[in-house]
Image 1 (tube, rainbow, N blue to C red):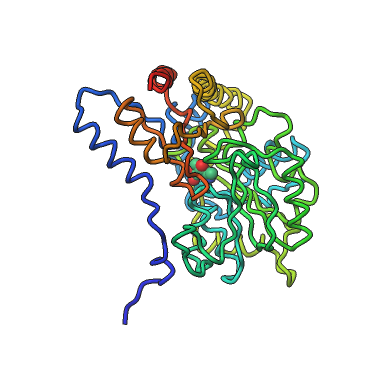
Image 2 (cartoon, helix red, strand yellow; image 1 turned 90 degrees about the horizontal axis):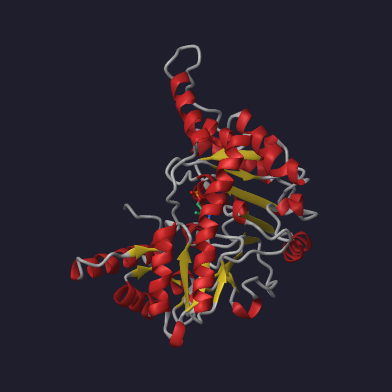
Length: 405
Ligand SMILES: *Cc1c(COP(=O)(O)O)cnc(C)c1O
């Protein structure tokens, strides 16, 4: 008798963005004359930079000639990109990570969703609340759930780490010991980042308890505070407890191109001494046929001097928007967080409105779209996420509308 995987039936409605899209479409249909400004979904808007585009053309041309044609890429990634990432992202920051500990993929979403496959089904996981939904949903698919508590909106076998204004959005060490700990810094959705001292406490905790930290550094390029680490391997002891996930999406605009990587150090082992690196390489080699050559050459170009200058330009364009939003909200008396080391602003909803009530009010009265914080977890209730990925013009206009609300 055919049956689907029962763990997939446990997935809770993460219909956040489809509900947003439905409400926006209804509002536009009711008021066709209104210009709706979207500061909701976390996708970049600026085009790829010239150095990246030149690398794409060159790699495409190579494919047209027998001598330079490339078939299947090595499934763990081309040496030229693994070497460039090791040199630029780690050695240049004093982190001890080698090219053969770096596994190239089609992006951080796949890696952060797939990494749980190499761990035992009875592992306990800890996630921040609010959370990037992929960490939780991929573990639900993997069967690490227990019962769902409707009142708390939480799974019994998942440890939730509330991140609110009370703890400056930096999770406290848990009282029950998790096996896997997901940390995203700079954080989506709260826009805040962990300082090195705080991250070091998590690394020490993980080493003391035999836990593994899965560190998502997708927004590393947005860090401006010198006390915020760009990599978890800046913390001492991280080689024995941490996996790091990186993306070319938010720094270099590859959301549509697709490229990322995961670092699994050779020193990282389970309680029986099995090297996680070897399992991840095995998993990658079995289920993934390598990121495309053209994309990997585009990624290599990001690390060139010209590429680095260009992506700094992209990041500063978006961070100018972040400043516009932060300052505009503060001037209008709103309380808001983030936007210093990340392109997200996490504002408190005014007048005690729920996240969705504020969403509806903002859409109806100002035609501005954001994301309700409660969609990222119960501790997101009463918050609202705005992104800095719009144009300068739209961002200014949206902030003026918020101020008139
Ligand atoms: C956008 C985002 C990603 C996705 O990155 P891709 O490389 O485009 O798959 C991963 N993690 C977080 C927290 C993100 O916000």
